[in-house]
Image 1 (spheres, each protein chain N blue to C red):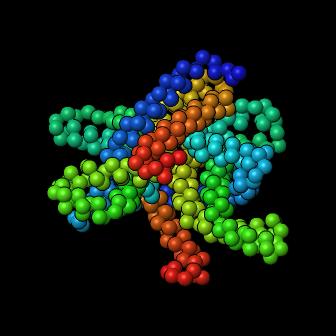
Image 2 (cartoon, rainbow over the protein chains, first blue to last red):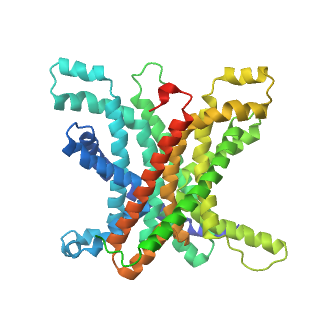
Image 3 (cartoon, rainbow over the protein chains, first blue to last red):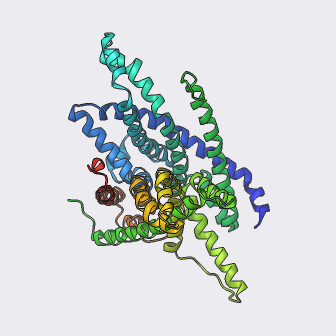
Length: 229
Length: 231
């Protein structure tokens, strides 16, 4: 084991970790924006609302993230219409392509989590809201969604960790995230074991910190629950 | 129809390799998972600590990093070992073997938790009754615990297998010619990335659907002794 090479390249690796966090944050925000409408459509009784949501969720949960990234980054350029469009400066950038793919992917998983949570809201509470004269939208906004968010919270924490781990795939489309940076350093130093282990430790550190923070958040949001510590 | 420019059978060959990789990693992962769960529930503290560290570390790492570490790390270990035995050359682990080990390790780490939960879900009275009948620990495990663990753990293991199936695409990064790598080769020749990556996506979806159907049948078969669980 050569520790000097790890110490010498630590600043570079941390720089990569910064990009990893940036990609994950953008991906999660985009994913959440997609997940809410997708989940609401998915629980609708009207087929023309739930069917597209079902297809979206099914496709993105049933195919590898790597395929999705390649479809966005390499695939879209196949069409002249895309290359000529105003969006091309964005769709040409690996950074935005990675974020689009991450958002679509985590959005599908989050929508499924949220769907389960919406369906897990006790029927009695929804009926009570209706009995109080709340309209469907108002009870959705005041009763169903706040309850569903709380129910979905633990599962969503797992999804964030999966996204963090999945972000390593950004390295396959030339991005210098933590994994990409590690691979670049290895191409120069040819010390794969040392550098990958260092990157692995940084990933573990990030997951650990996130799990601790999330536990605090969950505890804070359960203050009102009797018996919850 | 979509024009695959004669690469259709190459993609199918790749898909066959993907299935082989997934099944091989599944077997390794199931063995590791059962061993891990037994270790986590054992009375021997070092075994518990070791299994706990294994699941925590592996579950916290990106699968891609695990694949890369195994591929490069194992090659170095093998080269060092070969040198100690008097062979001075570079020994390399094949991408298939590295993929099976890496994906098996990942599956095993998650499966450890699934098996642990399933073993804990079996009523203690049944194990005590088996002991009272004079069954030894191994016989109790094989005849009483394991058949029920199978039923309880199957839905969880099924989800893990669907994840594993998709993670096989990561092994393309170290050059194994599975579906993803074959698709990349086809894209290099035809310059039609969208067509080919979409075809690959559809093939992955088909494999996922077949696996889901098989799992559903498996769950029903495992629950045949439980009339209410039949669906």
